[in-house]
Image: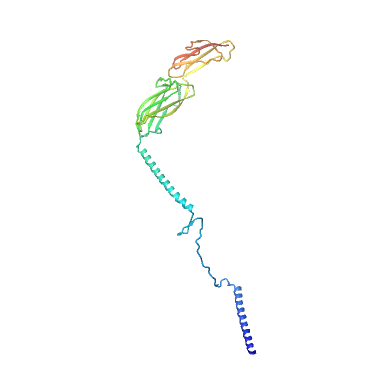
Length: 315
């Protein structure tokens, strides 16, 4: 028994020694690996994690099964709503564009009887300045650029009151002439002999108009243009000779002289006087033809003079 116990003790001691040696060997290997410079390059056996695919949503809405894209329900509704609207808008725009082209072609090719005043041109040519009472030529050109005729066309000219038109005095300053029918692309030229009266360096406006009707219509259409000329000198000059100062109840004399500056004879001249406040008319040579302040001068030739002497008193 003692021998058996001895062998067991020896066996246990040997086993303990072997375990110690084995542990020391493992520790040394571990230390060697830890302190070795090639530790990171050593092949190590690692466990791999298994991948699991989850069907997750990346935004509000439902995922598309085929491509994995996510669509919002509101976006889908808006797309469905906007697409027909855009298509409808495109179709309407296209139809409008085609209709505009057809309408423009129809007008351009002359397939309409519409007359536009914008296609009626009036040109007026005359002197920039004239002498009052002297005749000058007013040239008028009318162009019909429409594709249809101007029916029952009339030329109207409005002068300052008292003007002379084609050698005839006009009390209202209006002149009218019938032009008949003006064909498409036709140009009509008119020359009107005119004469205007007024003060020196005053502007006088002459308005030229055309009135016409469209075919199969009773509506009167028109277009007008104005022309302005300057009166460089008055046809008649008036000089007044009167004292600078007068005493109360003292007789005074006023001498009036009218001179013609026109190359033409001034017909039917009339002089009207306006007296100062409180003036009492006594006599005049020649006598007034109307009241105490109006004289009929008759015809005044170029270079001739008309003299009127007036006497009165200021109380």
